[in-house]
Structures are given as C-alpha cells and as structure tokens.
Length: 475
Image (cartoon, rainbow, N blue to C red; front, side, top):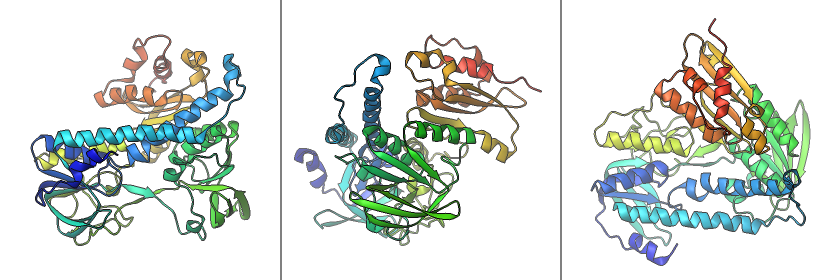
C-alpha cells in the first residue's frame, strides 16, 4: 500500500462521534459504510489488519486465484489428451504466490478508492468496546483513539479453528492463510478437514505436486450432503491420487509443520499413525468475538460464541447490529453482502429480515460442486415429499468438447406441484449453471419452463433441458 493512500486514514482527525460506526471491514461492513457514506452520513470503519476483510485478502478470492493456477497445472499434466506435449513442465510456487499477491494488491487499492469516493473514514487499528457504542482503537504504533457511534455494526468475521488436540498448536499448522503464502510445494501434506476449504486445498496442492492425505472425523466427506455427492467426491480425490481417511479422530500431534509431523488417530477402533512434512487444519471456524469488550457493550453471545441476533440482525444492545460470520450467518461472502442489505434498510427505518432467504453455495474443486435449495437428505428430514431427477454430466454434449464429463446434475421437484425445491450439481461450471435454477426458484417458475426453454447449443445450460425433462410425472 502506498504512503499516499494511507495518508487520508492517518491524517483524519474528525470528531469521535459518528452516525454509524462499524467494527470490521468485511463484506457487510464495508458495503454499509460506502452506501451510507454516499448518502451523506458520517461513517467510520475500524479495521485491525485486512482492508476489505478476509475475502479479498486471505480467503475467497486469493484461494480461487491459487486454485486456478492449480487447474492450469492440471491441464499441463493432461496435455497429451489434447494433443500437446508436456515436456519440461515445472511448478514455480513463488510465481503462483506472486500472481495471487498482485491480485490482492489491486483489490486493496480498489477498496481504498471506494472509501475515498464514499466519504466513509477508514481507521486502521484494533478496536475494543469500552462502553455501549464506544470503541477504543489502538493503532499499530500504540496510539489510542476513542470513537462513538449513534448506531453500531459489528462485522468482525471468524478465523480457522485450531482445537485443543495435544501438540496441534505447537506443530504450527498451516491454515488457509499460510497455505496461500507458500513459496514451496509441501512434500507430504496432512490435511485435517474434509469440508469446503479442505477439499479445495487438497486438490490444488496435489495438482502442484504434493502428496496429500485428507483426514476427516465424520464417516464421509461433505457429511451434510447427499451420499451420492460424498461418494463422487471421494472417487474424484482418489482418481487424483489423494488419500482420504474418514471416521478418524486425532488424539495428538508431534513435530512441526514444514519439517515433519506425525498424527496419532483412532480409526475403526484402532490407533493409526500418519506422518508427513506439513499439516494444514481446515476443520471449522471460530467467531472473532473474544476480547473485544462485547460484555461492556451489552452485546450477548450464543453458547457457541457467536453474537446473538434476531431476524433483523439486531443484537441485544439497542442500535447495535451484527453482520457476517460473527453473527452466526452462513459463512459465505455473499451472505454477508445480503446482511448488508438487511442492516442498511433497518438502520434507515425499514423492516427487512433474514427469514426465508436462499443460501446458494459453490465449492471450487474441479469440477465444481454447487447447490441451491433442498437436497434429498434435508427434504426427508423435513418430511417434504418430492420427485427427483438426475442425469450424468456426460449427457451434456458440451462436456465432451472440453473433456470434462465427470459428475452429475440433480433436481428436486415438489411431489404435488411443479415447484422446484432444490438443485445440486457436481460438474464443470457448476457455479455458473446453478444461478439459472435459483432465479427460477425465486420467481416461482415451474420446472417445466426450464425443461422447455431454448438454450444455445453447445452450452452447459442445455443440461437443464435434459435434467428437468427427466422429472417423473406426478403420481
């Protein structure tokens, strides 16, 4: 970050009273700041480290940048399939990291420009409540400043959980943050966690050349998804040379990541030992709510440490809202962005709520896994009768032109009407196909509209014709 771009933050000496004060500059917080700032309100954002929050710095966008480099690497190693030689292929992790860093720098510059244009003030430092709606900010050089807001939004996010397993913390494990800064290829990565973050990194690191072992405590990968997704994901990883151990509980860890590490775990009733050069932990998130004075602010927490909010995202303190991960919202940037819309409207006197909102998601493995609405597991748990259609990705002719036929599409339709209940895809461009079904669900369009729509040929969306054409008739 250039000195000129920091100047407007360091030299701001405005009075410490604001119309809206925001702790944390993640997706929800920064959008509230920019939008209300443009409306002429006096707004300040207190940010400890990452301008713009985790997504543009250490999470969503940087990880997808590195994943794309890994995908390009996979094409090199598959190049004979496309009639191209792969002689002298070499992975330069320092260059991979530099590409990611260039993107992050550009995103930070973009954020700083948006702060300037909006009129919102960005205050860099660690914030802690010292009284209701009052925050003491300590800068990196130890200077302190007290700021107050007539209305306050807490948007402090979450961090990777490092649990109390003996020896784990001492092993200095990688999280997604450190993994994105690697300038070397781990010889053998032991990756703890078979969820979104873990599987994305497992595949990427394997494609860069690491030996990878995934250790998952549940009996199957992506345990909240339908079993066919878990099986397909397990087969995908196996085909890429990734070892997967499910139903494993780690008892203790020895060594230090980057040198050697040894894991002792219970598996199928017996103890197993796994040894590698590096360990990465991707086994859940912990909200950033500890040590920021929420008790003196009158903000209560749930038993899991998240900020207690109602469906308007109001906390237990008057005129104080919470957004994103720290509020227990589904842990996606796009949900934090939706939290912004809710809080923004409510600050201005609206009555917007989180009740009933859709939560789409996409895991950026290759191929992608995306879902909107109900899966079969959830429909059965809720006692909702449904019809199901399922077709292989290979049925979409476009997949044959790009040599990406792996996976399937699945749709759930109400048993007694033509309403779409849910859509799941494990396949190339899954995250780009899903929104078409999502819009149909939002609009209440019957599945027959997608079945009969004319989509351009040859495109992935043609698969929706075949998928919804396979929906069984009502009984």
